[in-house]
Image (cartoon, rainbow, N blue to C red; front, side, top):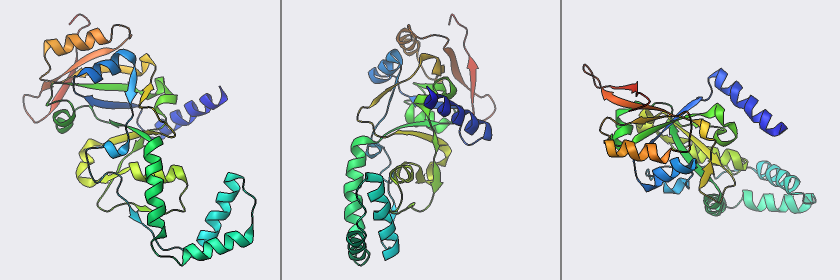
Length: 268
């Protein structure tokens, strides 16, 4: 209980400072997977290696380390794992690795394989009216955009990582701890994607893909401007067990390249 209260406090303070968004949006096509997710109140967390951008997860590797850096790394590792500190053995290992070219590439390859087994990621946006995202992720405006209120379920949505859009790969060091290593892998993308204003939540360790959320966290469902009556009925049927979900729809602006989002009546 204490841990949960701390999470809620940290989340609320981060939102107040503007470090993370309270409301996140998830663009989805209407298919069996989406309808099941809505019916059962879960988010699908995937491996980052399943992302559509082949550059996702690419890093620049720092392969040059001093003897002192490697020694300190293994000293801390032994402490964390509860191993006895044998200064002589650590010193020999540090000297060997600091003088060996390319050793970190081999270590990293194995580490990434292990991470891919236990790290799962779910992607969101902080905007709900992106014409490009409706086109790319909601089946050409025929699907939906789901609005989540993170404060209604802090344990599930803790904590959204804003993507940093850059031109060069982030630099990776084996001296980083595991969570920092994961964060670097999943929180950088090519700056051509910056229109997405993406946030990612990662779970580690997590071997399953389904993460269930409280129904009240789903605040609204926005229908695309090309969504059909059949699509809307399917969504409403899937949500029969949920409560207080507001329905909205996108409408094309009369004067500019813009989507206007308007609330639908309860009996639409």
